[in-house]
Amino acid sequence: MLTTIHTITDNIIIRKSFKWKNSLFNNKDSLNINDLYNRIERILEKYLNKVALSEKKCTNICKYITNIHSIKSRLDETPWNIPGNLNTAENKIFLQDLDFYLMISGVLLKANHLFKGFIDKCKNLSILQMLPAFNSHPKRIKETLNQLHESKWLCQVKHQREQSSFINAINELENNIACSKMPREIIVPIQNILKTFNAPITNLEDEEYKTASLQSINQHYEQLSQLGNRLTPETWPVLKQMIIDTLIVRPCPSLTLDYIHCIDTLKSKNDISIKHEVKGIKYQIKSLSKFAKKNKFYTPDTLKQLHVIYDKLIEYQKEMKETSSCGNFIEWTQNPKEFVKKVQALIANGCISIKGNSDTLPIVEIITKFVKVHKQNNSGMLSPNSLLTYFKKANTGEL
Image 1 (cartoon, rainbow, N blue to C red):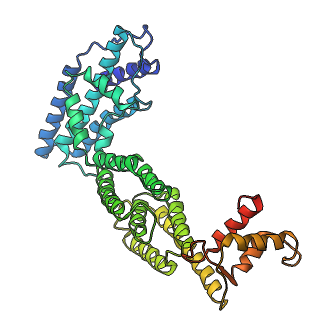
Image 2: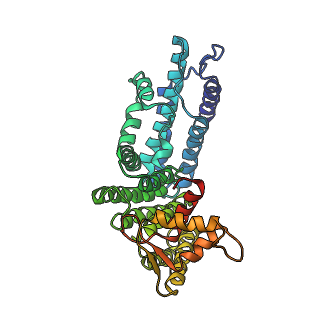
Protein backbone atom coordinates (compact mmCIF):
# COMPACT_ATOMS: atom_id res chain seq x y z
CA MET A 1 0.00 0.00 0.00
CA LEU A 2 2.90 2.38 0.69
CA THR A 3 3.95 1.82 -2.92
CA THR A 4 0.54 3.10 -4.04
CA ILE A 5 0.87 6.17 -1.79
CA HIS A 6 4.34 6.92 -3.17
CA THR A 7 3.02 6.63 -6.74
CA ILE A 8 0.19 9.08 -6.01
CA THR A 9 2.75 11.40 -4.41
CA ASP A 10 4.96 11.25 -7.52
CA ASN A 11 2.01 12.28 -9.70
CA ILE A 12 1.04 15.13 -7.35
CA ILE A 13 4.61 16.47 -7.38
CA ILE A 14 4.53 16.52 -11.20
CA ARG A 15 1.16 18.33 -11.28
CA LYS A 16 2.36 20.67 -8.56
CA SER A 17 5.42 21.65 -10.64
CA PHE A 18 3.03 22.74 -13.42
CA LYS A 19 0.78 24.53 -10.88
CA TRP A 20 -2.04 22.23 -12.03
CA LYS A 21 -2.28 24.24 -15.26
CA ASN A 22 -1.48 21.54 -17.84
CA SER A 23 -4.50 19.61 -19.15
CA LEU A 24 -2.20 16.72 -20.06
CA PHE A 25 -1.81 15.90 -16.41
CA ASN A 26 -5.15 14.40 -15.52
CA ASN A 27 -5.66 12.84 -12.13
CA LYS A 28 -5.28 9.13 -12.77
CA ASP A 29 -5.20 8.28 -9.06
CA SER A 30 -8.66 6.73 -9.03
CA LEU A 31 -8.13 5.13 -5.60
CA ASN A 32 -10.66 6.40 -3.08
CA ILE A 33 -8.82 8.51 -0.48
CA ASN A 34 -11.30 7.58 2.25
CA ASP A 35 -10.68 3.92 1.53
CA LEU A 36 -6.92 4.49 1.61
CA TYR A 37 -7.12 6.26 4.96
CA ASN A 38 -9.30 3.52 6.45
CA ARG A 39 -6.79 0.88 5.40
CA ILE A 40 -3.91 2.81 6.96
CA GLU A 41 -5.97 3.36 10.12
CA ARG A 42 -6.55 -0.40 10.42
CA ILE A 43 -2.81 -1.00 10.09
CA LEU A 44 -2.10 1.54 12.85
CA GLU A 45 -4.67 -0.01 15.18
CA LYS A 46 -3.22 -3.46 14.47
CA TYR A 47 0.23 -2.14 15.42
CA LEU A 48 -1.26 -0.58 18.57
CA ASN A 49 -2.78 -3.86 19.73
CA LYS A 50 0.51 -5.68 19.25
CA VAL A 51 2.52 -2.96 20.98
CA ALA A 52 0.06 -2.92 23.90
CA LEU A 53 0.40 -6.70 24.20
CA SER A 54 4.20 -6.40 23.93
CA GLU A 55 4.15 -8.55 20.82
CA LYS A 56 5.78 -5.89 18.65
CA LYS A 57 8.52 -3.36 19.33
CA CYS A 58 7.89 0.35 18.88
CA THR A 59 10.80 0.54 16.44
CA ASN A 60 8.60 -1.05 13.78
CA ILE A 61 5.82 1.49 14.13
CA CYS A 62 8.44 4.29 14.24
CA LYS A 63 9.70 3.10 10.85
CA TYR A 64 6.16 3.06 9.47
CA ILE A 65 5.43 6.58 10.74
CA THR A 66 8.81 7.80 9.43
CA ASN A 67 7.90 6.39 6.01
CA ILE A 68 4.57 8.26 6.02
CA HIS A 69 6.35 11.43 7.14
CA SER A 70 8.86 11.07 4.29
CA ILE A 71 5.90 11.26 1.89
CA LYS A 72 4.72 14.51 3.49
CA SER A 73 8.29 15.84 3.37
CA ARG A 74 8.40 15.18 -0.36
CA LEU A 75 5.11 17.02 -0.81
CA ASP A 76 6.54 19.92 1.25
CA GLU A 77 9.77 20.26 -0.77
CA THR A 78 8.22 23.08 -2.78
CA PRO A 79 5.81 25.44 -0.97
CA TRP A 80 2.08 24.81 -1.28
CA ASN A 81 0.99 27.97 -3.04
CA ILE A 82 -2.70 28.19 -3.94
CA PRO A 83 -2.77 28.30 -7.78
CA GLY A 84 -4.80 30.91 -9.60
CA ASN A 85 -6.83 30.95 -12.83
CA LEU A 86 -7.61 27.23 -12.91
CA ASN A 87 -10.46 25.97 -15.00
CA THR A 88 -13.12 23.73 -13.44
CA ALA A 89 -11.36 20.45 -14.33
CA GLU A 90 -7.95 21.69 -13.16
CA ASN A 91 -9.39 23.02 -9.90
CA LYS A 92 -11.06 19.67 -9.23
CA ILE A 93 -7.73 17.85 -9.65
CA PHE A 94 -6.00 20.41 -7.42
CA LEU A 95 -8.59 19.96 -4.65
CA GLN A 96 -8.25 16.15 -4.85
CA ASP A 97 -4.46 16.47 -4.50
CA LEU A 98 -4.88 18.90 -1.62
CA ASP A 99 -7.27 16.48 0.09
CA PHE A 100 -4.65 13.72 -0.28
CA TYR A 101 -2.08 16.03 1.33
CA LEU A 102 -4.47 16.72 4.22
CA MET A 103 -5.07 12.98 4.53
CA ILE A 104 -1.32 12.36 4.99
CA SER A 105 -1.31 14.96 7.78
CA GLY A 106 -4.38 13.23 9.25
CA VAL A 107 -2.58 9.88 9.25
CA LEU A 108 0.40 11.38 11.11
CA LEU A 109 -1.86 13.06 13.66
CA LYS A 110 -3.78 9.79 14.16
CA ALA A 111 -0.52 7.89 14.66
CA ASN A 112 0.63 10.50 17.17
CA HIS A 113 -2.65 10.14 19.08
CA LEU A 114 -2.39 6.33 19.19
CA PHE A 115 1.32 5.90 19.99
CA LYS A 116 2.21 9.05 21.95
CA GLY A 117 2.53 7.05 25.18
CA PHE A 118 4.71 4.35 23.60
CA ILE A 119 7.29 6.38 21.65
CA ASP A 120 9.97 8.54 23.26
CA LYS A 121 9.47 12.26 22.65
CA CYS A 122 12.92 12.51 21.10
CA LYS A 123 11.84 9.94 18.45
CA ASN A 124 8.31 11.25 17.94
CA LEU A 125 7.46 13.87 15.34
CA SER A 126 6.58 17.37 16.44
CA ILE A 127 3.01 18.54 15.84
CA LEU A 128 4.40 21.17 13.46
CA GLN A 129 5.99 18.43 11.32
CA MET A 130 2.61 16.70 11.00
CA LEU A 131 0.52 19.73 10.05
CA PRO A 132 0.20 20.95 6.45
CA ALA A 133 2.38 23.88 5.45
CA PHE A 134 1.05 26.57 3.10
CA ASN A 135 2.84 29.54 1.57
CA SER A 136 -0.09 31.69 0.38
CA HIS A 137 -2.00 34.54 1.97
CA PRO A 138 -4.18 33.26 4.88
CA LYS A 139 -7.33 34.59 3.18
CA ARG A 140 -6.65 32.55 0.02
CA ILE A 141 -5.86 29.46 2.07
CA LYS A 142 -9.14 29.83 3.98
CA GLU A 143 -11.15 30.29 0.79
CA THR A 144 -9.56 27.19 -0.76
CA LEU A 145 -10.01 25.00 2.30
CA ASN A 146 -13.68 26.03 2.46
CA GLN A 147 -14.11 24.18 -0.84
CA LEU A 148 -13.08 20.99 1.01
CA HIS A 149 -15.78 21.32 3.67
CA GLU A 150 -16.59 17.61 3.30
CA SER A 151 -12.99 16.53 3.93
CA LYS A 152 -12.88 14.35 7.07
CA TRP A 153 -9.27 15.41 7.75
CA LEU A 154 -9.74 19.16 7.48
CA CYS A 155 -11.49 19.46 10.86
CA GLN A 156 -8.83 17.26 12.44
CA VAL A 157 -6.03 19.44 11.05
CA LYS A 158 -7.79 22.70 12.01
CA HIS A 159 -8.45 21.46 15.54
CA GLN A 160 -4.85 20.36 16.03
CA ARG A 161 -3.52 23.68 14.72
CA GLU A 162 -5.81 25.61 17.09
CA GLN A 163 -4.70 23.42 20.02
CA SER A 164 -0.98 23.63 19.26
CA SER A 165 0.71 25.46 22.14
CA PHE A 166 3.76 26.23 19.99
CA ILE A 167 1.74 27.78 17.14
CA ASN A 168 -0.34 29.80 19.63
CA ALA A 169 2.84 31.09 21.32
CA ILE A 170 4.38 32.04 17.96
CA ASN A 171 1.17 33.80 16.89
CA GLU A 172 1.06 35.72 20.18
CA LEU A 173 4.60 37.02 19.69
CA GLU A 174 3.92 37.89 16.02
CA ASN A 175 0.80 39.85 17.02
CA ASN A 176 2.70 41.67 19.77
CA ILE A 177 5.38 42.74 17.29
CA ALA A 178 2.81 43.79 14.67
CA CYS A 179 0.94 45.99 17.19
CA SER A 180 4.04 47.28 18.96
CA LYS A 181 4.93 50.97 19.21
CA MET A 182 8.31 50.22 20.77
CA PRO A 183 11.42 51.88 19.28
CA ARG A 184 13.74 50.07 16.89
CA GLU A 185 16.37 49.43 19.57
CA ILE A 186 13.84 47.19 21.38
CA ILE A 187 11.72 45.78 18.56
CA VAL A 188 14.66 44.60 16.37
CA PRO A 189 15.96 42.15 19.03
CA ILE A 190 12.40 40.85 19.53
CA GLN A 191 12.03 40.34 15.76
CA ASN A 192 15.27 38.33 15.79
CA ILE A 193 13.93 36.29 18.70
CA LEU A 194 10.89 35.44 16.57
CA LYS A 195 13.12 34.42 13.62
CA THR A 196 15.08 32.12 15.93
CA PHE A 197 11.94 30.29 17.04
CA ASN A 198 10.73 29.97 13.43
CA ALA A 199 13.67 27.65 12.71
CA PRO A 200 12.78 23.98 11.90
CA ILE A 201 11.78 21.77 14.84
CA THR A 202 13.23 18.25 14.88
CA ASN A 203 10.95 16.28 17.22
CA LEU A 204 8.22 16.48 19.86
CA GLU A 205 10.70 16.95 22.71
CA ASP A 206 12.31 19.87 20.87
CA GLU A 207 8.87 21.40 20.23
CA GLU A 208 7.81 21.17 23.89
CA TYR A 209 11.11 22.67 25.07
CA LYS A 210 10.85 25.60 22.65
CA THR A 211 7.17 26.09 23.48
CA ALA A 212 7.98 26.51 27.18
CA SER A 213 10.77 28.99 26.35
CA LEU A 214 8.53 30.92 23.96
CA GLN A 215 5.71 31.16 26.51
CA SER A 216 8.20 32.56 29.02
CA ILE A 217 9.38 35.12 26.45
CA ASN A 218 5.77 36.20 25.83
CA GLN A 219 5.36 36.75 29.57
CA HIS A 220 8.52 38.87 29.56
CA TYR A 221 7.11 40.85 26.63
CA GLU A 222 3.99 41.71 28.63
CA GLN A 223 6.21 42.85 31.49
CA LEU A 224 8.32 44.89 29.06
CA SER A 225 5.29 46.66 27.59
CA GLN A 226 4.12 47.63 31.09
CA LEU A 227 7.49 49.14 32.02
CA GLY A 228 7.58 51.52 29.05
CA ASN A 229 8.43 51.85 25.38
CA ARG A 230 12.06 52.91 25.68
CA LEU A 231 15.36 51.18 26.40
CA THR A 232 16.05 52.19 30.00
CA PRO A 233 17.69 50.69 33.11
CA GLU A 234 14.20 49.40 33.99
CA THR A 235 13.37 47.73 30.64
CA TRP A 236 16.85 46.41 29.87
CA PRO A 237 16.87 43.53 32.45
CA VAL A 238 13.63 42.17 30.92
CA LEU A 239 14.81 42.49 27.31
CA LYS A 240 18.18 41.04 28.31
CA GLN A 241 16.51 37.95 29.82
CA MET A 242 14.49 37.47 26.63
CA ILE A 243 17.69 37.52 24.56
CA ILE A 244 19.60 35.20 26.91
CA ASP A 245 16.70 32.71 27.05
CA THR A 246 16.60 32.63 23.24
CA LEU A 247 20.38 32.20 22.89
CA ILE A 248 20.19 29.20 25.23
CA VAL A 249 17.49 27.65 23.02
CA ARG A 250 19.39 28.31 19.80
CA PRO A 251 22.58 30.31 19.07
CA CYS A 252 21.92 33.43 16.99
CA PRO A 253 24.77 35.85 16.08
CA SER A 254 22.23 38.60 15.24
CA LEU A 255 20.87 38.47 18.78
CA THR A 256 24.40 38.62 20.20
CA LEU A 257 24.98 41.82 18.23
CA ASP A 258 21.61 43.16 19.42
CA TYR A 259 22.69 42.53 23.03
CA ILE A 260 25.96 44.44 22.50
CA HIS A 261 24.13 47.27 20.68
CA CYS A 262 21.77 47.69 23.66
CA ILE A 263 24.77 47.84 26.00
CA ASP A 264 26.33 50.52 23.77
CA THR A 265 23.09 52.54 23.79
CA LEU A 266 22.75 52.45 27.57
CA LYS A 267 26.48 53.05 28.05
CA SER A 268 26.32 56.18 25.90
CA LYS A 269 23.67 57.53 28.29
CA ASN A 270 25.60 56.45 31.40
CA ASP A 271 22.55 54.30 32.22
CA ILE A 272 24.31 51.02 32.87
CA SER A 273 26.79 49.41 35.27
CA ILE A 274 29.30 47.46 33.18
CA LYS A 275 30.58 45.78 36.32
CA HIS A 276 27.08 44.47 37.05
CA GLU A 277 26.69 43.30 33.43
CA VAL A 278 29.99 41.41 33.56
CA LYS A 279 28.91 39.70 36.76
CA GLY A 280 25.55 38.71 35.21
CA ILE A 281 26.93 37.24 31.97
CA LYS A 282 29.66 35.46 33.90
CA TYR A 283 26.97 33.76 36.00
CA GLN A 284 25.08 32.73 32.83
CA ILE A 285 28.25 31.17 31.36
CA LYS A 286 29.01 29.34 34.59
CA SER A 287 25.43 28.01 34.90
CA LEU A 288 25.31 26.90 31.28
CA SER A 289 28.69 25.17 31.53
CA LYS A 290 27.62 23.40 34.71
CA PHE A 291 24.35 22.03 33.33
CA ALA A 292 25.50 21.53 29.72
CA LYS A 293 25.67 17.75 30.00
CA LYS A 294 22.17 17.55 31.47
CA ASN A 295 20.62 19.80 28.79
CA LYS A 296 19.95 17.85 25.57
CA PHE A 297 19.47 21.07 23.65
CA TYR A 298 22.80 22.63 24.62
CA THR A 299 25.28 23.33 21.83
CA PRO A 300 28.86 24.66 22.19
CA ASP A 301 27.89 27.57 19.90
CA THR A 302 25.56 28.88 22.63
CA LEU A 303 28.49 29.20 25.01
CA LYS A 304 30.55 30.87 22.27
CA GLN A 305 27.87 33.53 21.80
CA LEU A 306 27.82 34.28 25.53
CA HIS A 307 31.64 34.51 25.52
CA VAL A 308 31.45 37.08 22.69
CA ILE A 309 29.23 39.23 24.92
CA TYR A 310 31.49 38.64 27.94
CA ASP A 311 34.65 39.61 26.00
CA LYS A 312 33.01 42.83 24.81
CA LEU A 313 31.97 43.74 28.35
CA ILE A 314 35.51 43.10 29.63
CA GLU A 315 36.78 45.38 26.87
CA TYR A 316 34.40 48.12 28.05
CA GLN A 317 35.47 47.56 31.65
CA LYS A 318 39.15 48.00 30.75
CA GLU A 319 38.34 51.22 28.90
CA MET A 320 36.58 52.57 31.98
CA LYS A 321 39.50 51.63 34.25
CA GLU A 322 41.97 53.35 31.91
CA THR A 323 39.78 56.44 31.87
CA SER A 324 39.32 56.55 35.65
CA SER A 325 43.06 56.03 36.26
CA CYS A 326 43.80 59.38 34.68
CA GLY A 327 42.68 61.23 37.79
CA ASN A 328 40.72 64.50 37.59
CA PHE A 329 39.10 65.62 34.34
CA ILE A 330 38.66 68.90 32.57
CA GLU A 331 34.91 69.37 32.09
CA TRP A 332 33.18 71.12 29.19
CA THR A 333 29.78 72.20 30.49
CA GLN A 334 28.47 74.12 27.46
CA ASN A 335 26.90 72.82 24.26
CA PRO A 336 28.96 69.81 23.07
CA LYS A 337 28.64 70.97 19.46
CA GLU A 338 30.57 74.15 20.31
CA PHE A 339 33.37 72.08 21.87
CA VAL A 340 33.59 69.85 18.79
CA LYS A 341 33.56 72.79 16.35
CA LYS A 342 36.37 74.56 18.23
CA VAL A 343 38.57 71.45 18.49
CA GLN A 344 37.77 70.39 14.90
CA ALA A 345 38.89 73.80 13.65
CA LEU A 346 42.19 73.46 15.56
CA ILE A 347 42.74 69.96 14.08
CA ALA A 348 41.92 71.18 10.56
CA ASN A 349 44.36 74.12 10.91
CA GLY A 350 47.10 71.78 12.11
CA CYS A 351 47.22 73.43 15.54
CA ILE A 352 46.56 70.08 17.20
CA SER A 353 48.30 66.89 16.08
CA ILE A 354 50.00 63.75 17.37
CA LYS A 355 53.57 63.56 16.12
CA GLY A 356 52.57 65.62 13.11
CA ASN A 357 49.51 63.42 12.39
CA SER A 358 46.18 65.25 12.31
CA ASP A 359 43.87 62.21 12.08
CA THR A 360 40.76 62.85 14.14
CA LEU A 361 40.33 59.37 15.73
CA PRO A 362 43.60 59.14 17.75
CA ILE A 363 43.32 62.78 18.79
CA VAL A 364 39.77 62.32 20.09
CA GLU A 365 40.79 59.12 21.91
CA ILE A 366 43.45 61.03 23.83
CA ILE A 367 41.18 64.02 24.47
CA THR A 368 38.51 61.79 26.07
CA LYS A 369 41.07 60.59 28.62
CA PHE A 370 41.40 64.10 30.01
CA VAL A 371 38.23 65.95 29.00
CA LYS A 372 34.65 65.13 29.89
CA VAL A 373 32.04 66.77 27.66
CA HIS A 374 28.57 67.26 29.14
CA LYS A 375 25.56 66.19 27.10
CA GLN A 376 23.40 68.90 25.58
CA ASN A 377 20.68 68.39 28.21
CA ASN A 378 23.24 68.01 31.05
CA SER A 379 21.92 64.50 31.81
CA GLY A 380 25.44 63.10 31.98
CA MET A 381 28.67 62.93 30.03
CA LEU A 382 29.15 61.95 26.40
CA SER A 383 30.84 58.58 25.93
CA PRO A 384 34.01 58.46 23.77
CA ASN A 385 31.98 56.81 20.96
CA SER A 386 29.30 59.52 21.10
CA LEU A 387 31.92 62.27 21.06
CA LEU A 388 33.62 60.64 18.07
CA THR A 389 30.25 60.60 16.27
CA TYR A 390 30.02 64.36 16.80
CA PHE A 391 33.47 64.80 15.22
CA LYS A 392 32.51 62.61 12.25
CA LYS A 393 29.42 64.76 11.67
CA ALA A 394 31.58 67.86 11.91
CA ASN A 395 33.88 66.44 9.22
CA THR A 396 30.95 65.86 6.84
CA GLY A 397 29.31 69.19 7.61
CA GLU A 398 26.26 67.55 9.26
CA LEU A 399 26.86 69.09 12.70
